[in-house]
Image (tube, rainbow, N blue to C red):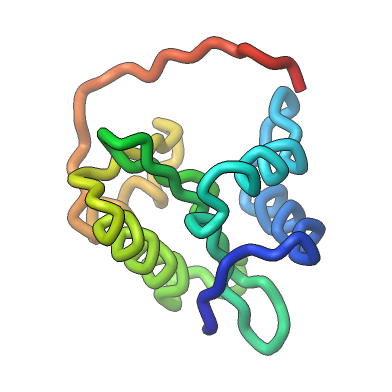
Length: 138
């Protein structure tokens, strides 16, 4: 798998991957998420490409205090091959180079397989609640 920055031509394949892996929600327009990400730290939006096809994605951010990870996914037919871990490692490398001391990420509580994935990679579970408020309706 070749890791590279997202390019606008990847949009349809990326959104299809996110939908197939259950990462999208009706209240979030994934194309608007992509558009917004391309305006802020686009170098932290990565795709994994294999034989010309997008097989994995990761979107990161750094606010000067903590890094964040979103939309980390590998296509179902490529799950368990290390592609997600490779993208996460590259994102961690890029965030570290920016001076980022720590990464936070969110996983839905019912997503046991993904929680185990992060456990294996050394991520710690914290007893925290995620709060949010929509500022701009999609």
